[in-house]
Amino acid sequence: MKLILLLMSVPFLLISCITTLAGLDSGDGELPEEAEQEEVAETDDAEEAEEEDPEPPEVTPVNITSEAFISNFFTAAYEYRTISIGSSYDYMTGVLGEPEGSGEITDGVYYHYEHIGFNFPASAEDADTSEMRIDGIIIFPEEFSKMDAVENYGWPTQDDVGNFRMLYDSDPDNGYYIMMPYDQEDYVTALLLHTEDFQDTSLADD
Image (tube, rainbow, N blue to C red; front, side, top):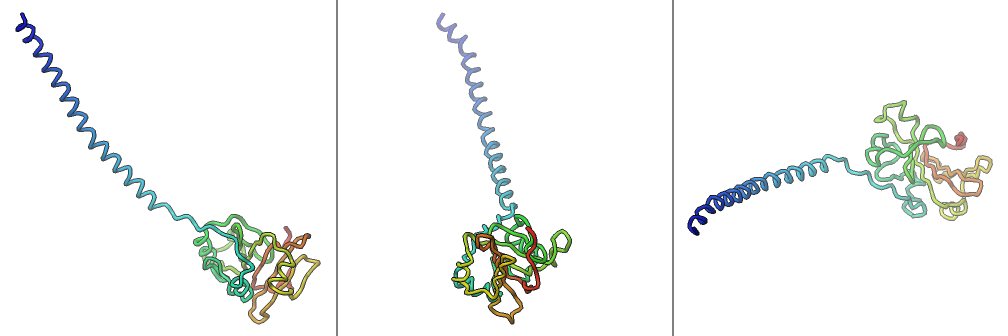
């Protein structure tokens, strides 16, 4: 009787072993495929990262009281991240990215970032941007009064009280001029280096 029961259980044991082996074989076959898919995904992510354009550098505040700034700004040799008077609009955006906005202080249009702006003779919408050249650099100071300007830069050539601006021209022969408009509380709102003689111009309306 025991022999008969043993013989009857043999087929079930064989079927169980075959099923188990088949399951292991199937699982072993899937592992390399999953690994291959993960490797392909990692490769795609790496390629996408390489294709993304690098972020433009952060526009940081300008130290307008440093000796280097004063020397360069008042002799029209100032540049910010290699951008200077004469640089093109395309070069500006290539270095700093697209500007945050635009405005007017004097003739033309300036395009600005958080702490600095660059003036052009015309709007970028109306000209070939590769040919547009910077004719003015504007620094936007923080909590900088008229007396701070006098202490650091000396007395202005003219304090045009009627137009709320100070005019500086430390080197009358270099063809560049400096204007500092201020508000009713005598805080300087901008330092503007330009190729234009500001005595012949008035401030643009806000």
